[in-house]
Length: 188
Ligand SMILES: [Fe+2]
Image: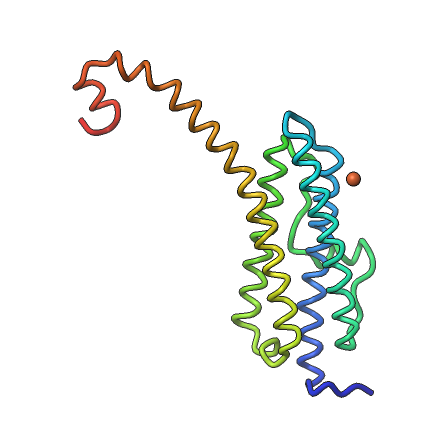
């Protein structure tokens, strides 16, 4: 017998949502480990370290989600088959480059942020459960931090590309007659 002031259907709905989240976190953790192990290139050290840090955080979070489901009287998914069946995130077994790995992880963290936000805004059963609402809000913040770190890393690469492109354009533009330069830049 269990009485924490929540109707059974509220707890069932919270557990359903948490189990889907658990499956997504498991896929994302596995993907992050894959990239931690297999990343190569000039940024190996920082990417290997960041992916390592992120999968350890995800594994801690996975444990908290599963135990939250138990605290609500539910049963967490505990099999790989179950995780793959339930997850919304998909695996990309062969990321082509280090930056493709960064982009894929950023994409997944952001997808989870949007999914959690959507649940919080629309799920009326969830709104009755202050404990779970607070819990998933904390998860949302963890994913926001992870996405920010990945995005910032990628930003550095984009800035470098922009700078190189800018350097390549400068002498060419100087040699052009004024009216051609104006039309080449779209102002003519
Ligand atoms: Fe490691």
